Image (cartoon, rainbow, N blue to C red; front, side):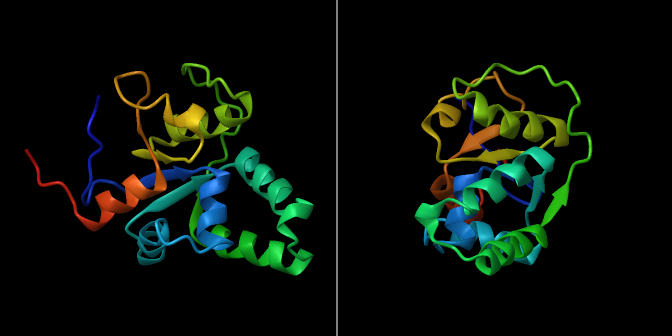
Length: 154
């Protein structure tokens, strides 16, 4: 299993939709270090039209009971902290995720050269480790711990 690297070279990340919700809707304590790192410029979160569209659809779910204004505020706060990849349909060879809806996050992470894909999805997390992907797949808690206590170089 590969060990995720931490430190100044960890800059680019992709956050799946549930992690974005934790940061900007629920203010989850385990994910707060990620938000602080984004705000401080220590991390750069990447999005593309596919991941932004999913966020827009999810924010509109009735179960969240977010007004149109609240949905827009989340999109704006998150959007202010992201960089958008325009190569939305570039072909990237990767193992297939068992949940096809999550493949877009894997493709985006590979395409932008992200160090981490941060996810809560068990199917995505199961793809981490080894040499199957060119980036590490981490839970928000693991990513936050790595940000708070960087691993010293070996």
